[in-house]
Length: 475
Image 1: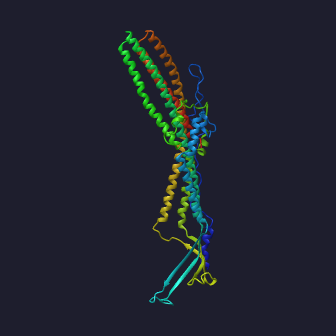
Image 2: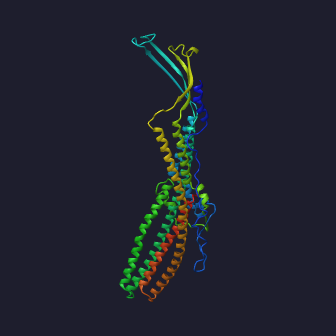
Image 3: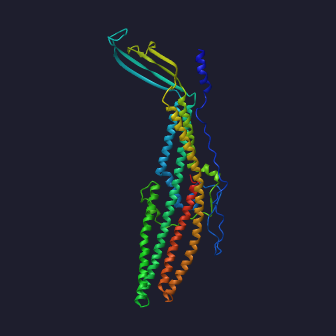
């Protein structure tokens, strides 16, 4: 008895302890502010105030798409958030993780099982026994119970890992939502910019066709050379040839939007057909603080929860080094006759402790602990990499947004100057005061700068979408 008490004493002392390391969120150094925050832009050379949006370290709006003031964009984002199939899959993964957590947590409770059987048996005449060669019926029914005592916390570590996986699945759903909203914004802005570029191309084509008709009349009157006619015709054909490629890209953007809202590719054709401007950013853009980024970006939260789960799995693996102590019991009825099967004398029962302790498994347990430890170290490095990438994404988005706005301002001036030059060249050419090449160059420059401005306006809007995605806004 004394030896048994000494053997049980370490188990009693360890009861309530948890094997494996306790998880602590890794400390991460964050910058004091965003280095690429652009200052308020100075006035333009013509004295007009700059129209660039200013990024400030304020709170990030959750529904950032409202900042564009575009009802169609808002409607598309809302529909995508309600029906997108990637989100449906992410939500199903959350339910899977919750089911796993419930299954793991069930090991903390007693396991009860019922059984019943009937058999007809015959004993061997040649085997030892009190009644050789006898045939009889055997009726059995009862309950078996088993309760593993979580003395070392291995089961609780499993529950801890399962709960962390649930939180990681929820953060993954949020990460999918952030990416989805960014994709909707990207495809919508792309569609509107292509719509604008096609309209500009058709407008320039019409102007160039007018110039071609004028040149042909002058040629027929002997006031222009055939070379001028051919140059004008070539310009018309070149502009007309660029339109089909733009239409193709526009239709592909429309198809992508249909898929994002879980609709057939052509479902939005009529809805998006009316012309609408490229969305413009608001005057002030809030990007939050670096210290808030780790709490707001769902991919960072997902990686941190995966690290917590990997840490808990070390404890689950370590549990196998220690004995498993269970309480085992059974109760039921057993009889060779159906008539007295349910009577009191037919009862059987047993109860008692059970201890299982692995002695030699060829190093499997230690190897499994080493595996889980290495996985935890990998998860830690992955978390640190995600954090660094998050800071880089914001800085990259800030400088891209600022650069796109500077480009747009210059192109706006270029379009204004080219429009004036084209008007002057056409008027002088109609009066016979300049040659056709001057008109041709002016028209080409105008079309090129207008198309570049439309693309620049797209880049500014996409830059803001990328910025909001980088700071984890929207979900």
